[in-house]
Amino acid sequence: MTAWEKLRPYGMVAPAIIIFSLFFIYPIFYMIYLSMFDWNFVSPTKSFVGLQNFRDLLTDADFRKVLSNTTVYTVLTVTLTTVISLVLALWLNRKGLFYGFVQGAIFSPHIISLVSISLLWSWLMDPEYGLMNGVIGLFGFGKLAWLSHPSTSLISLVIVAVWKGVGYNTLVFIAGLQSIPADIYEAAALDRSKPWTTFSKLILPMLSPTIFFLVIINMLGSFQVFETIAIMTQGGPINSTNTLVYYIYENGFRFFKIGYASAAGVILLVIVGLLTLIYFRLLSKRVHYR
Amino acid sequence: MTVRRQPLFRRTAGYALQAINLVGLLLLVLIFALPFVWMISTSLKTLPETMIFPPEWIPRNPVWQNYAEAWGTGPFLHYFTNSIIVAGGILVLQLATIIPAAYAFARYKFAGSGFLFGIVMVTLMIPAQLIFLPVYLELSSWKLLNTHLGLILPFASSAFGIFLLRQAFMQVAEELIEAARLDHASEWKVIIHIMVPLVKPVLVTFMLFSFIAHWNDYFWPLVMTTNETARTLPIGIAKIREVEGVATWNTLMAGNLILVTPILIVFFFSQRQIIRAFVYNGVK
Image (cartoon, rainbow over the protein chains, first blue to last red):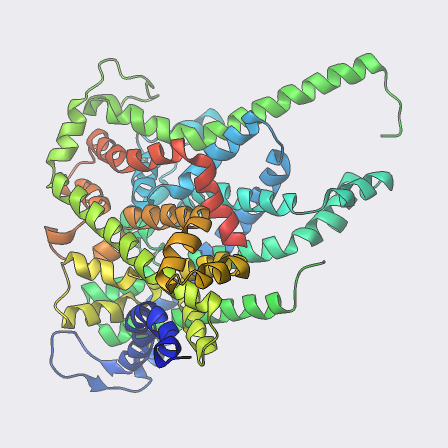
């Protein structure tokens, strides 16, 4: 083997690795470093404050509100999306042109820009002339303020996220259902198993890797929600929809509290890291049943 | 289930179930399509018409002017070009960096390959949104804010792409490559003339994925640019809302359609491909 042949693989992976190192790996360490400083971006000196930023964050009522908003948003979004998608998948998992059309229709929001979706739903949720109030009016409900009242703002964002995410999740579930071998259903039918028993004892366990994949992916996504908040609510009213990434953005780019924002970033990093770790730990234990 | 029913009753019940099923399906389509229809309808209304309640679905005199108005709220041709340059530039650089890397990871044994692939996997797991602040400071110190390059470089490679393509390359039979090597084909020729054509479906999948994602991106252009020079279409559209004091939903929805239409057209023509790109490769 010539020297060139030995070096070749390194040359081939180098461009990608350099990009990753510069824009992913190094920034992670840089963020951890910055989280221990008090710095406003403009001043030439950074002053070392150790873990003070973290202490400040955890005692800050606003940040605690942000954490609880993020958690509530994530739990609601993930639960609703998963349950609704699973039901839809069981329903829509059929061949035929029409079913294909319905699958395509519910999937379409997934590829639309979050900007468009946020603007569209701001309009749908307009308290005076929006379509949503018209729809709930048909069922005899009074007008809601949706995004402009703290009691409904977060749930309004959840509705948008579920609407956007359900199609993708449904199709992933359908892909999962189709990978279940047909003879399993046949065996269940031969045993005269009741539909609910078939579902809970066969389908659900066989789908567990898919469920697991989706729950983790949706959680990771929900923890980083930004666009809908930036466009629809700007974290308001009265901080009711402020979540982690938006909070970091606000502190970094509006208040220029770089160290503080970095510390919040590190907390988000830890959460995302834990979720990923859980994912791989459980994945390596194989939630598979074959 | 144990009770035996009359065939006639059973048949009627069957039809009724089918009808309910059909109504349900139509309702489902409505829930996902109606907002878009509402958007189109609003984009063609006069401002007073948007305030009529209950709404009229078909505007009496469609106001095409709204589109011109939306387009005129900012330098939209500029935004459009920027979007093409950024999403296109990212795509080209990604292809240039992921194909050789994926090939090397799939086909060569070399010291440290496990560690280097570990870096790829970490990158795959860490969402870019998480580290925007340090990346911003980095680009700022390199004087790359407000430039196309600044928007492109952080995404010049893709861990997802490497992962996807490596899997595909590993499935190509060794004999094919050996045969080409016996013909004294260089490794580059092997990659470009044998490997790439063989994994074309995966490559197309990745290209769709990447282009749509970066065409739609709002976050990075918002964070990494402070003036118009490199701002992209999503920023321009979102700004229509800030311009006016009153929400002119008709203009805004017209602008919104300008952003949505290209993607919807692509989706319409390559629906199966796109769904496969987004759904199946995410799972596997």
